Image (cartoon, rainbow, N blue to C red; front, side):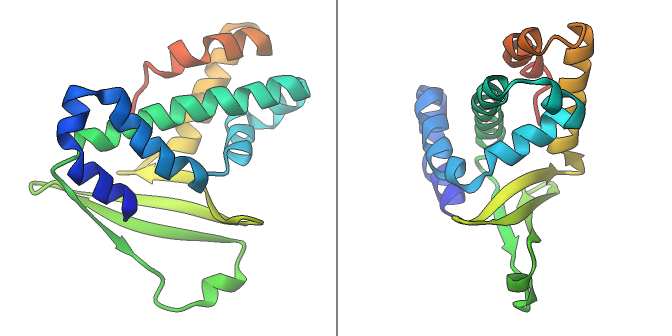
Length: 173
């Protein structure tokens, strides 16, 4: 809800200073995501095991930046919209390790479902996947990583170096 307020109150900032707008979104969104788990999932078991510990750590940072940039840009495009959140009606989720939080983005002319999968973490609940209007971002990014790795003869170092430029072309909208 805090992010929605930032989006609505900072629409002019996005047009005058997109980086400052993205930074506001990133400040809210970054602590909510389990980037280590998500990055490992994006790499997939095969490439995660092929990567060195340093390459895994490097990919977490590379992936974090690309996801936050993509997500902030996507949210900026929906600035005049309203987002409503459906909370669990019972509290049985407290005993689970994963839960799903659903939102609806209402643009006035269309409604888009957004679903966040969260996992219990020592620091609280953290996002491990997002599905926007039926597009599973975790799966989309995993497919991109695998295709990029294959195109670089499964060289993890080359795959990481080319992640930002190649993955950024896919976008979310």
